[in-house]
Image (cartoon, rainbow, N blue to C red; front, side):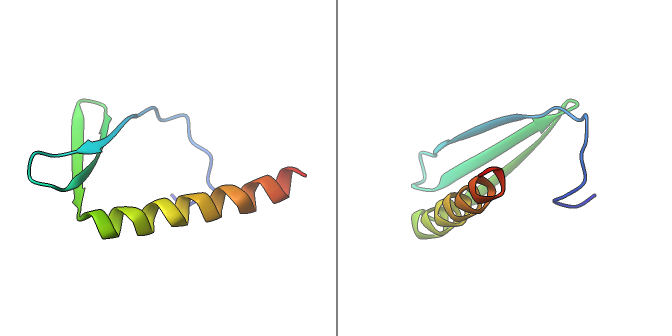
Length: 62
């Protein structure tokens, strides 16, 4: 499965700080959870990538 493949799969997403000073992205689906921890700088880079992808997606819709 890739970025352009549609799916009916459902998942929950949580994002927040940990008590260790990391940023956690937690994805849960089908009873399985995937915690992904990033240092704040990595999290900011990910946020920038998400904003850039959102801008490109908006351009497709325009």
